[in-house]
Image (tube, rainbow, N blue to C red; front, side, top):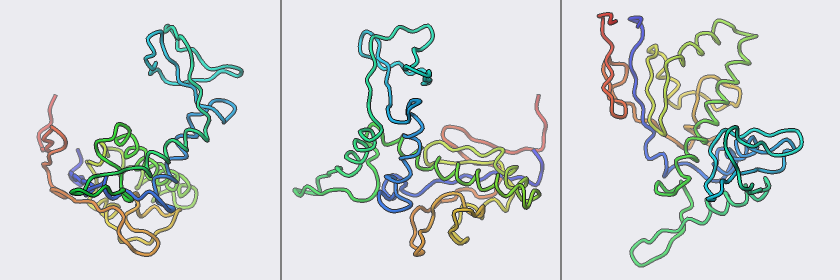
Length: 232
């Protein structure tokens, strides 16, 4: 590992609780794109393959020109078909019908998603992935105008990893600026990755940087250390 690189470990503070549901940066808006991508060739329906025991076949979905794809080497008993509109309606219903007990009072959660909900981890991952993809496209667009800067940004993400709301990277020191809300919000900007502040300057998500730019960090169940001795 080149000596100019450092380890950085960032955790999104209370990410599940702070993800907004409404607005341009809301989950209900960003979730529509990946759900739309799962549709068949008509762009209208989502097919879920079930085996004889009504278990979902989790092979990667593919769709032929005229009918749903049958997983190779697997027998399917039937398909469940859900329209795109129904899928989005189900997601909206789930995300806007979250109720919790506060003492003896039943209240509705209007910000964030519940950590204990079955699809919550997938919603979180898709939400953050939406902005990672947006940033990658912005870097791609920058390549024609400023190839050196685009190459520098893309290279910084070569050893960047995220698991849910925990991230780590072997990155140059300037990379930390991408995790702090100092740049103006701009859909085409490459100076920020995640939606840290909204258009009014209010904080959306905030990264807690642990062991910033050091040579040793803890990530998930691993202790990662940069050393000067080559192994292998």
